Picture (spheres, rainbow, N blue to C red):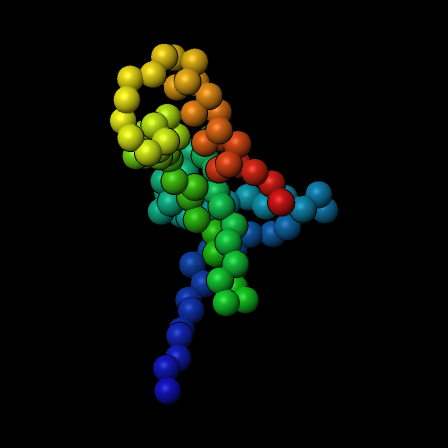
Length: 92
């Protein structure tokens, strides 16, 4: 039989407005600073909090060049980046 043991490394208190402060120990561990974005994910009934990853050059390349690399003008580049941002930050 397999058991997972969890150890609490920090705690936060929820305000009446539904906000929390992220403890300094956690901010440092995740590399968070002012303006950082964190993602909340559900996995097997548990909530996972992680630092939202930055866009990789591959993400940008895929947004600008649909399937084959070719030279495009700057407006196509801008449209590709806009499309990527909308898809990545779409709300359900």
